[in-house]
Length: 79
Image (tube, rainbow, N blue to C red; front, side, top):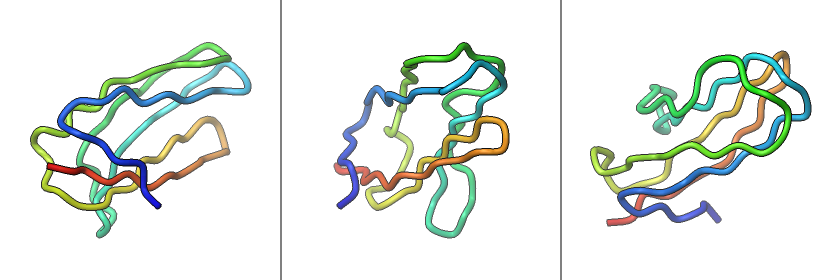
């Protein structure tokens, strides 16, 4: 089941090693609707703010890309 998100939420993620990282949110058609982080980051735990106030209720895909690796998770924006 997707992680529920209200209008503002903190997204937590972790990087195995330092380097460029991007955290984006996409609708189910693959369009990027938010960019939460983009640039050089250190290894370890990080947080980014997701302001979902402008997003319609529904399911979205959050994507973390770091180097050649990427991870995705589903989130549900709930009004």
